[in-house]
Length: 398
Image: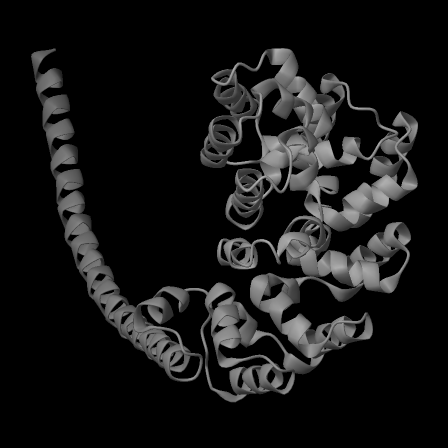
C-alpha cells in the first residue's frame, strides 16, 4: 500500500515538474510577445506624438494669424484679439476681407466695424453674399437708412446670425400688424435695436388678447409697443408679474395711465417702490398719498432717489409748497430742476419783490407746467421794460 502511494507521489511530482517547465517556456514566450507589444506601443506613441505636435503647430499658426488679423484689420487690441480668437479661426484673409468690405460699402464706420467684430467675431466666418448681404438689404427695404442699419448692427451684432425667414421677417411683420405704419415700425426698432432677439411672433396674439379682455384700447396697445417694446414682449413670467402689479394698484385699463404704469413698473421692483415710499414719507406722505401719486404720475416711481430728495426739498423749503399738494400734482417731480424749476422760481421771486405780480395770483404748479413760450410771454417779455435784467436772469439760469 505504501509502495503504491509512493508511486502516485512520484507520478504527481513528475507531472507537476513538466507543467512547471511548460509554464516557464510559455512565460518566456509571453515576455517576448509583451516586449514586442511594448516596442510597438513606443513606435505608435512616437507617430501619435508627431501628429499631435503637427496639430498643435497648425493650431498655433491659425491662432497667430487670427490674432494678427483681428488686430491689424479689425482694430481690436492685442488682448481683445487673443480673447476673441477662441471663437473664430481664420484660415486666410479672403472671406473676412470681403466681410469688412461689405460693411464699409454699407456705411459702417471703422469704430462700428470694430465694435461688431469684438462683440461677434464669428461674423468674419459668415458668407457675405449668402448670409450678411440679404439681411442688410432687408433692413434697407423696410426703411432703414445705411446709418440706421449700421447703428442697429453695431448695437446688436448677433442680429446678423438670426434667420431672415424664421426670425427677422416674422418679427417685422408682427410689429407691423400692431403699429400698422411702416415708419412706426422703424421708430420702434430704432428705440429697441434688440427687438430682433425676441421671439415677437409668438407673443403678439396672446398679449393682445389679454389686453383686449381687460379693456385696454388698441391705441394704448400701439403706444406701449412703440414706446417700450421690451415691456410688451418680455418673458411670459415677467409680463404677468408686471401686469398683476399694475392691476393691484387699481389702474384703469381703459385709461392711458395703465400702459404708462406697465413701463414704469417694468423698471421698478417692489422693493424699490417701498424704498421710494419711505423717502416721500420723510416729507409727511402717507401710503395713500404715495399710491395716489403713482396713480396720477406712474413715472415718479422711476425718478432717482437723489432727484426725489433734491426736488422735494426745493419745492417745500425754497418755494413753500405743501408736500401733500405735491402728492396731488406729482408730475412736477419729473421736471428738470436746473432747466425749469429753478429758473422759473427765480423769475417769479424777482417779480414778487418788485411788486409786479401778486402772490395770490401765483399758482406754482401751473407756472411749472407751462410751455416755455407761454411762460416767456406772460412773465418775462411782459415785464422786460420794468426789469431789463429779467431776461438775463431767466436765460442765464436755464
